[in-house]
Length: 317
Image (cartoon, rainbow, N blue to C red; front, side, top):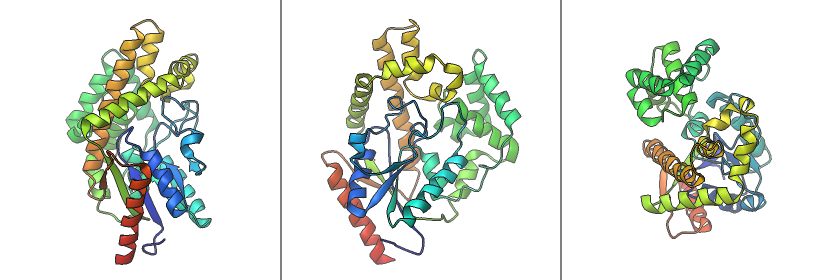
């Protein structure tokens, strides 16, 4: 099922809890595919519940790649993800299967589907550590975010101040290249990628999506979220990435007796809804995305629509 001389790469994107995994599995069954995760938290091990990693039942026998393969103690960049994902794509394609990229991390999806030659190679570890140290000071996260707002208002609007890793990275990019991350991204979008990407996103009415997010958090609690956070807290210095995951700091605060568990759950749901807003903003800006109304439709029905759209594009090429 090739559309040009470039390898076909269907992509299923969209906000958290929108049903991406079920659609990816259904599409893989229709076209002979395998899922490659594009989730910046699911790539880490020991965080299955925090990252809402798909279970074996949810995978339903379809091979999944780039799940739980990096230690939470390691720093993992978009460039590192691009290298790993492209290797997976090549391996899956070589076996005559179709890779299906699936996830809500827009930067990871862009890293694979766009050249992103900008600043993924530009790095200064001393500067990076200096910015991270600043964030640890009282009021440091806010000062770091204000620093980004002064040089790159669009990136600041997209990133929450608690997302220290990405906020500091955006500042680092500007200091090293003299060009904002927003401008780099704009230039990257003008370049042609290595794959014939067909990018889908699942569209839900806002309130329906929020209900799904709340239900997802309830499911995570039932699956052992509190115990997983307790385990990570016991060796927190070795798991700095876990502290960036939604739900970690909220549940950790409850475990330390700083707030009741019900409030931690409420804050986790609120943070997840805010994440969904940021994801929607990211993907709405991407003119390549084909939005499919998801409410009232099964994963199988949505996957069939995706297959038909891919087929129609094949005939036009």
